[in-house]
Image (cartoon, rainbow, N blue to C red):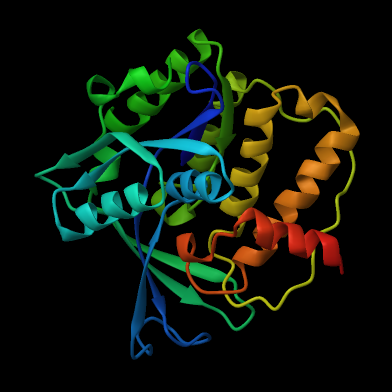
Length: 272
């Protein structure tokens, strides 16, 4: 599950992501099973971290709250956040758990299937007591809920994007009930009905496309929190976000494929 808090204080427009960051191992050839793959490309991933980096690459300001294993992968991920301009005061390391890993099967159309290694991984062990609440003013779940409560008390808008990976849930019903239990914390769900068309691109890997979209939309909301009340402005922001998501599918991995504003503007200008 990924939860992103958006707010403004002395760091106006700061977007705080809290949740997981992990290593995706992506086959170097699409259309083969994990067992058949002869090699893998190592790529940083995890929806909340992807969103945080998407925001900084689009010129926004973001911070990440989460926990890594005190291992080479964990320190590599923390370094990637720093190199991409994500504020990392909320990053912790756990000496008793490993950084989460995911093996991703790429189908020929760019869609994916995931196999996770977390038993549990460090990101699932973040506790409420370990939260750096200065950024936004049962271990993993209680920490997320505490961060949401603190955000609400500080007058911060909450963006809740359930990252549904059914193999990580006991059952479909448990996944649905868990997601629905958080809805009441949302500031808004939808004010308009409509459709904003996407862009046709040559898709290689869909990993991170939704995160690129969400990151772009949060950058727009951080600049103007009343955006969702103006249908035309919202459509413009959604069109730009669609371009960001489309661009992200044109190369492998999530964070390496996240676009810059110039790249997205070029796609919007060209249209389909």
